[in-house]
Length: 251
Length: 251
Image 1: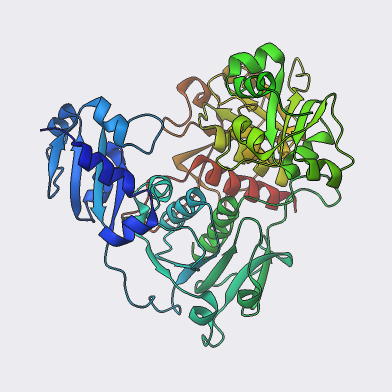
Image 2 (image 1 turned 45 degrees about the vertical axis):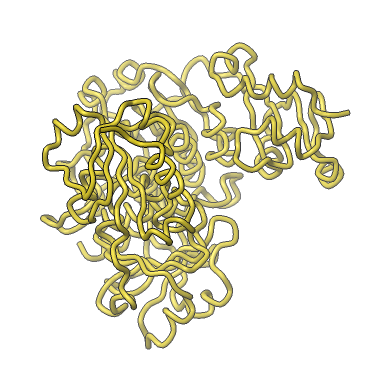
C-alpha cells in the first residue's frame, strides 16, 4: 500500500482553513508530535515510512499506510520530509469557555502569526495554564504551523474563539491583565492566581474595545531607560515572561 | 532604473552562508527593519518602490534603485514582497569577545533554528544584554530569517562565534549559568549581575563539554509536578524568562 495522489491532494488541501473546517480535520507531522497527539486525538489517516510503522506498533489510526520518502516529500508542509504525516479529527469544541474565576486564562487579541500562536500554546501548557481565549482575528490553532510549533500542547490546552470584549465583560472584579508601556513593573507588582492575561497582536497591540475592560496594567522592564534598543518583545517572548511571573506567585 | 536580473540573482544568492561570507554582506527586508539597520550598518545596495524612496528621503545606500512590486517579489525571501530590500555590509567582527566579567552575556550552544537565534538577539537587546557568544553549530546571525526575527537588534548586540568550552574556561569564579531539569528554581535562586547564561540546542540541550564548565544550574518551574504537559519550553521562550529574572535582579 502506498500514499495515493488523492491522499496527497487531501493532505495538502488542509493547509487552507476552509478545507480544515469542511472536513473538521488537521495535519500533524513527525513521529514525536504524531505520537503525542495519538494519546488524545482520533486519527483519521496516517502515512509513515515502513520502518516507523514497525518501530511504533502503538500507532493507531482509522486508516494507515506505509509510504515512501518521495511520497511523504510530496505531501509535507515542512522543508524536510518527515517520517510520519497524520490527519487528525479536530476535537469537539466546547460551546462556551471554562469559568474565568478560579483559574488563569490567556486571551490572544489578534495574534496573527501561526507560529507565535503555537509557541504560546506550548508556553501555556508548560506553565499549567489550561485555557486560551482567541479573538476571531487570531491565527487558527489548526494551521499546520501552529500545530507544529505547539509540540502537542494543542491537545491539552483548551482554546475558545470568540469576541474578547463579550467574553471578558461582566466578570465582576476578576483581574484582567494586559501589558502596556506605562504599566506597573511585573518584577514587583503583586499578581493574582486567577484572572485573564490579554496578549495583543504583533503589530497593533491590544484592541481598544478589549483595552477598556483591562483593570490591571503590567509592564516588562527591559533595557535601561534612554538606551537605544528593541522597541518591544516578540509576543511569544512576552507571554513566556508574564506566565513565569504568574507561576512564581503560585509557587 | 530598475532592479536588474543580475541584482535579483545576487540578492537571492545571499540566502547561502557561503555567498554571504564571500561578499561579507547580508540581506534585510521591509521599510522598518531597513531603516533601523541604516542607522548603524553601511548599505551596499537598496531597492524600493518609488513611493518608499520618496517617503524615506533619509535612506542612504552606496547604490539605490527604484523597483517594481514584481521585481521585489522575485528577489524576496519572504512570502509577501516587501516594499524595500537592502543588502548591508556585515559589520567587522571583533577578534575577541568583550570581557565576561562585569556584564551579563548569553551563550548559544548549538541553537540551530535561525528564527530562534533572531528572536533571542531581540530578547537580549530588550533586556540590555550586549553580547552573545555562539558555538560554531549555532545558526548564522546573517541568515535572512535571523535578520528578520531580530528586528534590527543584530546591529546593537555584539555576537562572537567560537568554541564555547575555550571561550568560557579560565574565568575564575565567574557564574556560568545553564538551565537543567534538576536545577534550582529561578523564582527563588539569588541571581548575579555578571556572568554567562548558556542556552542549549532545541533538540539536544547543552553539550557535555560546555556543561562541565557550568557552575550554577537553574530550572524554570512550569506545570504542577505529575501533570501531563509540554516537556520543555521553546529555547527562545526560556531565554526570555531567564533574561527577565536576571533583569529583575538589577532593578
